[in-house]
Length: 464
Image 1 (cartoon, helix red, strand yellow):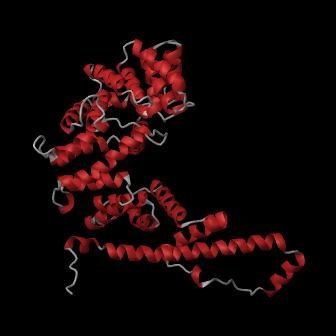
Image 2: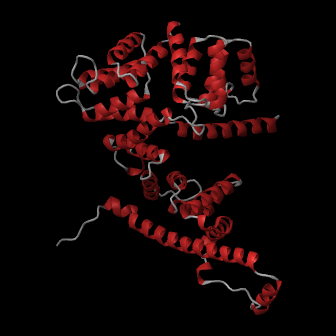
Image 3: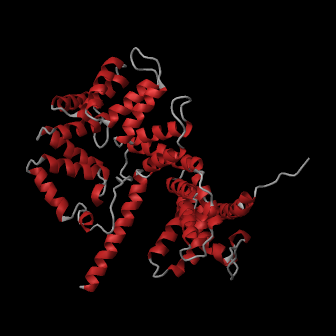
């Protein structure tokens, strides 16, 4: 039987070496956590069960020198990991885990990096990140990959950067998927450009993005295009204590519907530097809908009621506000009501009628939903028609709908025999665009922008 030939590209990554090293490290840390947890339990029992006589007898029998078990020994570059394992074991006992140790190592790495005055410290912190990555912390894997890729404080090692990104991407880490998509799209670090492979990575996070936006959480932030050389846009970045935000709140209290909309939107999505606060956003939507009878706020309030975001889920109440908004010619409300008829009543005729009406006004959601109806054969009186679905997905994507872009990219990566040719390069661009709107990516971009603004402000104050 002939030997299995390992491709050069796989051999260069040294995947086996990484996995074996991680396995040994995990085993070592697992032994330490178990040992320290057992010792912590013993000390806890001795504290509660021994009386003064037994304690005195025990001390009399103890040797004068300290004794360490063999499993307590640690090589220097793993000493901090061992100390953290001991701390977690004594604090949490049997609930301490390798995953918790990985998170602790990552937090320690960030703390050390935040206090560093030069890039020289990176080479000393990188082992902690790699150890955290071995213990399944994908954030540490991605950060290590970026450091090796950029050569920031360490020697640039493209293959190691690639390996670490692949390990994080196996767990669907969003940033690692973006990194790999970029590598294969642009052909960086000697890799050939490969639109199909780049699409696979971008499509993964793009599909996650559609789900993330539906399941909105405070950990997500709206992705905004903010150029650091655009002082006008930078001046609009704010927070809940900033004079701009406070002025808008004042205008909202005075009945300015647009100010109410803006405040609610910033709080709900975390726009313009405002920390997301879904509950407070819902209260602003409610005031705009009830007190000011603003159709935009009526629609937004109806949607949060429909999904139970920041308020108790109340579908009948949601329908009331959506219908009021539709009576005031709100196109998004027309689309939302159509979605209700389709999902809850299976009234496809009424749903399609409303969606087609909203589509005439350029609704991206209406075009998307009509595409789904054609694709799944739910359009009344018509058979499933993938080409018609494709046309509506194209329309939806061009109007700025993220899910429409994801579906359009899918059609262009496979094509429709005899009707739509494959367009892999264009598929990559649409999938990339959708992926870059991920809310968790937005949170990271926001932190980076806030840090930049803080440093800029400090520099100006110093110069002044």
